[in-house]
Length: 76
Image (tube, rainbow, N blue to C red; front, side, top):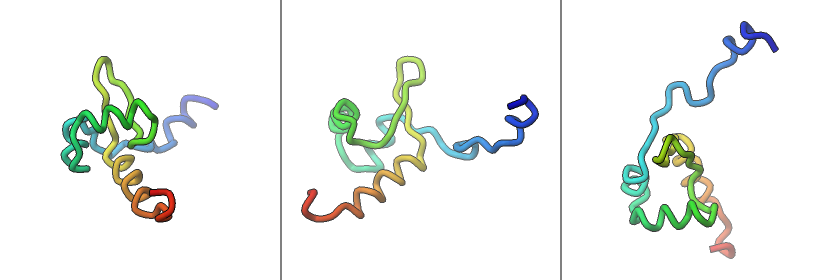
């Protein structure tokens, strides 16, 4: 794939906001410690490291929350 072809592909999060752990915890209304624990377990919203900080895409958090609301009751 050439550089010209790569330039034409849209970036998946080009117009998305980056959120801090504190901001995501506020959106989800959970303590930051719970968010850290979910990250450790691999069950929370998908985040990634930027240097020493963890960041989340706003759309990824919304998608995770939507998926949680659609889980069958027997999995709760």
